[in-house]
Length: 311
Image (cartoon, rainbow, N blue to C red; front, side):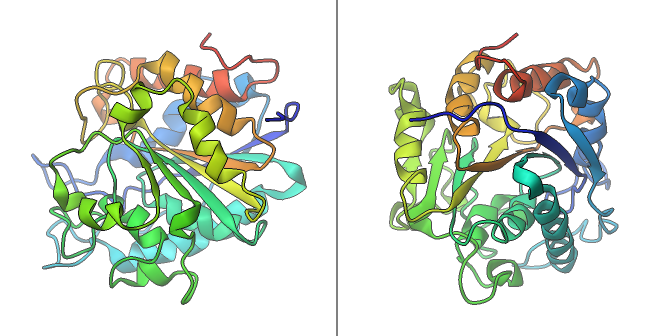
């Protein structure tokens, strides 16, 4: 695999918590919308020698503190935000830049893919996450778009969010790699449908046993019929001992060093369009240690002159 020299990096904030359920102990939207600024305050743009494009448009107010029966929380607000985010992503990808999108919850992948499709007719997706996120509104326990957004991206489920790009899905199942999930036994994440979907599913157990997991993923993502690919990185893919500041931690998973080794070859691939980071919650990170670890991870993968190792 040929890796390009460092490309210019741009940062875009996607400060939305619309796609995630509220806190269990109080009627308040989760503070994932604070994550972009929490990471910026640690000097992320300078450390990456990146242009900071600011945040995409502000998200609408959180509406569905009580879940609509069998539905998606804040469905129309997530749809609106996805379309507006797509405009900013499409603009941010100009001039050959690699775009780093700081979320926010996982549902921002819909707007990211919609925007990326304006630069690449057929986009692949590396979905690095502790969960499959392949539920339909009927299957999801929470009604969070974040628990369904991979399914929505490939057109699964009866929701306007599954048809953002019209009759064709945002990404074809055959062009998707799911890496690192640890949600065994939680079939409400859509496991049965995932098994027959055509998505390359590499749960953490398989990734842990394969030191070349990134190569296995890239074998699918660098196929000639693809014009580029997007990388989704959910902070909950990390071992909770390294990253407790997430809403749904799962036991096990990679430490920071192993995750850096997995994502660096993908980030540095010439067809990589951008990466989005999601689910980090500053309200669960009183001392800021989790934010510092995430900035170190991003620096290891994206900073000029970095060899992909943690600093």
